[in-house]
Image 1 (cartoon, one colour):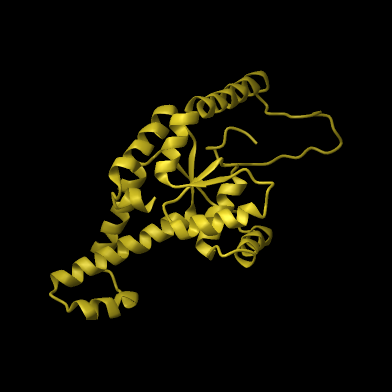
Image 2 (cartoon, one colour):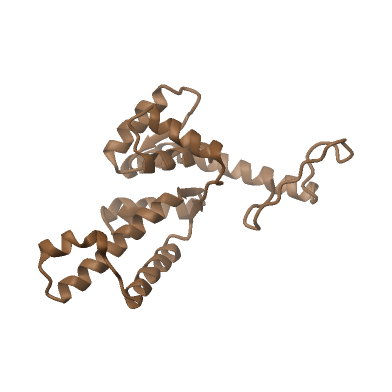
Length: 219
């Protein structure tokens, strides 16, 4: 996400974007990515404003944590986020329910591995979303996450960098796209044949109903 925003390694990130959009491959990210991006955008806006005021660079760095952005600067930050979301509208932002069990699971990842807390949220989000691959160019996170997953063989999640993901698409693209297509056909068939989205016996003694936002086709 950060490489995409700052336009780093453009050849690779643009190719990844093209493959994902062209083939309709589901792409998700954790909310923590947006917090990290916001922090960097605010830092950049603060430094830019201070340099324009001819402030001493050492002073700028010392006061970075005490930055006090104006309304105009915060408006620029908001616009940057809106522009990014528009340019990368194929990325779905996954938020976590705020119950204690989820956070204890994330804490467990941190406790039992060298994965830092923010990266643990990325990893947990990938695991619960059923992702096949987690894409990161952070080599430290990649190493720590792979070590954690090696001790948890029940997960088939692969940790790859952007270039490796492009290679996966080129070598296994048809297989990946085919599985997504079959899933979409299965979903469409279920919705057509069962417009009430009922699974099981409607007259069962106990019925469980889950309400979701309108972005989810069904539960």
